[in-house]
Structure formats: structure tokens, C-alpha cells
Length: 292
Image 1 (cartoon, rainbow, N blue to C red):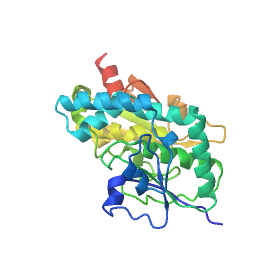
Image 2 (tube, rainbow, N blue to C red):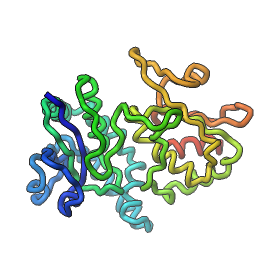
Image 3 (tube, rainbow, N blue to C red):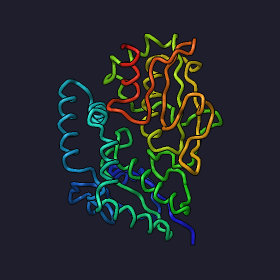
């Protein structure tokens, strides 16, 4: 039996016929569904929505940023970064028994041939947990060695694990089109100041969830700072059976986790290194290192 596919979309796209879902099952992943949302989807799993505390904190930061003059989308995306929304939502998926059961059930259904589409409220220009959930679900299916990785069914679909860009480049470094540069003005100014004097060496994989989550914003920050392409070096890596990383420069630079971004002078002096995750976005972390 052929395996099913996993897509994602948002409620307004369904209401206005912007998403062609075919015969796929519409699976809501909303913590606080409204009545009309319940009628829009075939089922809803509130346990797959972000935790209440995270939603409340996100709402408070969004309102505060909007009050400072940011547009709705800009305030939303900046609040996403400030609350470490992605990392905390992934922690929820890993630590919640209810969420784990729901993910395993969806994985089984897709394995059995069912097409599913994850649905929530945020439009394609807003950062959203459904993208993270889709990646998480695909990883679970990967572990079963059975999922057929199809391209995005919906507007806003992201690269699935195993899909890569042109040889020698990281597709995940393509700038995020909805990156809010105004929210990182100071960090971008520092990157701009060093744009012609340092080299950014980026190790990652288009199959890696952390890379797909973080590198598009970093690519957008470098673009906003006017960093020349020739000063951004891509090192696509793969994961060996024992979990170690294999690829160009891995041994030379001691790369164990990805994404890893090393900033160095033309003479090879290392000025800063971001490894996998931190309490700040990559651009902010490295700008702080360059300012030290």
C-alpha cells in the first residue's frame, strides 16, 4: 500500500479556496479552536497546539510590539523570536504524552495511506507552529523508513527532510521573505559594518529541522546587511549512522552539531561561533560576538 502525504495550510486559505487539498483529511492543530474553525476541519487536536502559557506570552509580546508601531505580521514574527517560540514548541512535542500519542497516531495513519493536511490560523506570512509540527511528523515517518516525501501541497509548505538544494549550497540559506529586519536593526547594523571584512562559514543540512528553522532568518539578516555572496560559504553536511556529521570542513573546524556558523577574518582568525541553538537568533548572537 502506498503511504500518504503530509501537507499544511491555514484557515483563510481554505475559506477562500486558495488551497487545493484534494481528498486529504483536514486536521486542526489549534489549542483554542472557535466554533467555525471546528466546522472547517474534519478533526482538531488541541494537544498539538502550543501550550497555553506560551500562547499567552506570545500574545503579550505581540501586543507590546504592535503598540510600538510594528505591523501585525511584523509584531507576530518578532514576538515569535523573542519568546523562543520554536524551541519551546518543540520541547512541548517532545515532553507532552498527549502530543506524542497524537503524533504517533497521525504517523500511523499516513503510513496506512491517508493524506493529511495540518491546519491552523496563521497565514503564510506569519511564523507558525504547524510548519514545525509537519517537520516533526515527517521525522517520525522517516524513522519508520516508509514515508513518501511529496512536495508542498499548500501555500507555505517547507522542505521535507532529505530534500536538498543545488550541490554545494544550502537551500535553507535562502532568505526568509517575511523576515522582520526592523526588529533586528542593531544586529544588522553590526553585520553591515563587518560585511566586507569577515567570512561567514555555514554548516547545515536541508534535511535538518534546526537548520530549516533558523537559517532562513539568518540568510535574510545577511541579505539585509548587504553581506556579499562571496563572503558566505555553504558547507552542506550529512548525518552518518552513528549521528556524526560528514561533509566538507567538518573535521578541520570540529563540527559536531548543526547549524554551526563560524565568523572569521580573511586571515582565518575565528571571531565568533554559533552552534545549533542559543538564547538568541543566529544573527543577534554573531553580531554580539563581533561587537565584543
